[in-house]
Image (cartoon, rainbow over all chains, first blue to last red; front, side, top):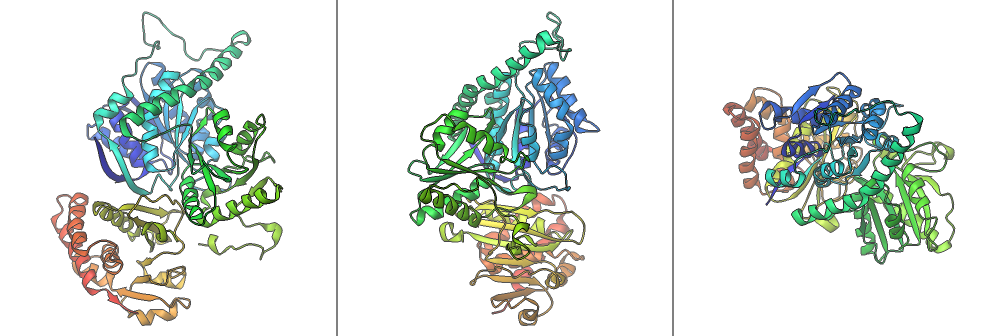
Length: 406
Length: 197
């Protein structure tokens, strides 16, 4: 039985946490994820959960609390954004290499420089090599559904997991949602029974010891293997979730891809705006499609490459700039995945949406239009592009700045 | 644009930080949800400070709404603070059959010269006086919520008033005078909103 409700993405995470009733939450507030510990601490105060909430003085300590709790055999959660995630950096690697299944809600926000509170993916894309599984959401519904699926994946693989959503766009936007009953969530997530933990007196365990050269590399190799082995687990959990809710999840979602000639590959809430552009262009008879990537770590290299090969030209979109001079992080990996396939499409990159820059249905029209030019001419042109930005190379009048002035 | 496909009503709110434009926006989403609609209510955030111009948005649709951008061509615009007319182009992008609703003691036609050549429909309501009369304080957001529902007909007026009472009872549990005052302000604004051409 599902309950129809309406709430923001942050409320949805707090609600999922309430239904799960984890053992420990260590958290420090930062916009736009502050509401998650705020709502959740109300559930604690009202006696709706018996979670131990540890109010710490920084995100470094918040992650340390989660590491300590998880190592002791407890189910630990936290939430953060942007600079908060950056401040956890050192501990992200400790959590992952110690194989601690911590579940973290990340509300994506730009990293500072200049300071900005709005959405992009620079925070989690920066943490992409830390050994955490990363799952992204388009809508409040997906935020909720992903959070519930995250814990079984994480605990099965003993890998920590980030459940990401777009700051303000979904975190503070109220929309319709279907919630599960508390019992359904509890049964789905199950009990956490770690094989071994610090406080198990019959088999004492050391966590986080020095990794000497004869051992360090095997630890890394095992982490890499676990990331690889998490692929079928992610699919199993998604199938179990579909059986419960009817909502289908995978590594990515293909939207109108079967007969598409060109496509966009994108992560997060802007996929919805892109789908609206697909709907309208389809009404004009244009064969366009969209692939929304849900799981970025592990990177679903082969299935994603095969899906992209259905079309002749793809635009791979990044809400993060990584200053590589070779395009954004999603582009680099998605384009790389095409290398071995003989029928690979042209692949170009767009950087978009940095620091909360809005992207509209009309912007997607432009991108599809660019893709059809490549489709017709077989000339990819510049593969590393920006969309929705003032371009100083064209002088003061070379851009329409009206949209960005308010 | 999107209402071609999905029967969408798109609303943009202009207010100043602290006046409750965001609260009214989220409340409208709440009420429309209760009426069986698909809803979005979302604020646009910048540096947060009291008195700074803020914007919030609603999309109210019959089918699930996928778009996650801001709203540039709204059906309706609600201006909670009249002084914004001097600094913000509030009428920008309003659709031809849409309307602008301003919290003002003046008549719709008196405001037209301040609106950068806007030729569409203008409605006014004195939300300040209504609020002071009903609540004893200037909280213009709830009267403006009544006015936008009345003008846009996005939800049936009677259903709205009934649902509103429930929402207030949820929000202000046990504060009977606040609930009554807010209900009075909403209903009065619905009666008094002056619909111009």
